Amino acid sequence: MSKPINYIGLQTYLKHCIGVLPDRYKSQESNRLTLVYFTVSAFDLLDKLELLQSQRDDIIDMVYSLQVLPDESGSNLARCGFRGSSLIGNPWNPQCVRVTTPISISLSQSNRHTDRIVRYLSFSIVNRMARSPWIPPGQQPTQVLQHDYAHIANTYVALCILKIFGDDYSRVNRDAITAGLRALQNADGRFERNRSRYPGGSS
Amino acid sequence: MIHWPTRMIDRWHGHDGLSSFSALASGSESDLRFVFCAAAISSLLNDWSGVDIDRATNYILSCQV
Image (cartoon, rainbow over all chains, first blue to last red; front, side):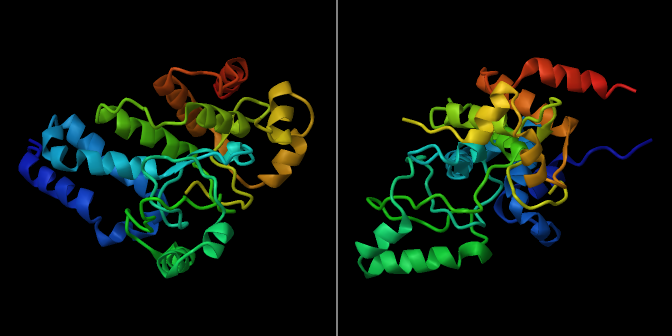
C-alpha cells in the first residue's frame, strides 16, 4: 500500500516556497513566476488558499509588477505580456503605469535620491528581491529596456495566478498581450516562446 | 497613434517577412507547448484576437502521428 500524502508537511513546504525558494531552484530565477504559480496552484488544489490570504494582495502586486507594458509609440508591442522575474531591472510598478519617461530625462531632473535609484537599477541584474528595484511615489517608471520581453509561458501563469486569487484583470493590458501573441505566431500556426534575438533552450 | 511594428503587420497579412523573422529567432523553439499557452491566454482573457485560430488548428492537426 502506498504511503498516504502528508498534507501538513506539504503545506509547510509550500508555505516555505512562497517565502524563500529552496536553494536548488536558484537557476530558475528567470522563471520565478512559474514557480510561484506551481506553489499557488498547489494551495488551490489542496483547497487551502486561505493560508495565503495575508499574502494575497502582495502576490497579486508582484505579478502585475512583471507585466511588460507598451511604450507610447507601441514600439515594443511585440514583446508585451509578462516576464518571468524582476532580474532585468525594471522598477517596481504594480499599478502598471504606462511607461513615459526615459531614464536619461529622469537623471537630468533628478535629485540625489533619484540618482541612487537609477544607479541601483543599473546593477540590479543580480537582484533577487521580488519587490526591487523600487521607484518612489511620484517618480516616473523608466524607459523600455532593450532586453525586456515577455515569455508566453509566464504570461499564461501570470493570468492563472490572478485568476486563482479572483483578481478582476483590471490592470491587465489585454490589447498589448494579444498584440504580443500575434507577434509570436509563425506562418505554420505554431507559437514562439518569446521575442528574444538570442537562440536558446526552452528556459 | 500607435505605430505597429512592420514585422507584426507582415505577419497579420501573411506577407513575406516571415523568413526574416525566422532568421531573427533562429534556434528559438516553437511548438505545441506555446500553442497551448497562447490558447490558454486567449481563453482566460476571453479575447482570441491574438491567435490565428485556423493556422493554429492546422498546426495542431499536423502534429498528429
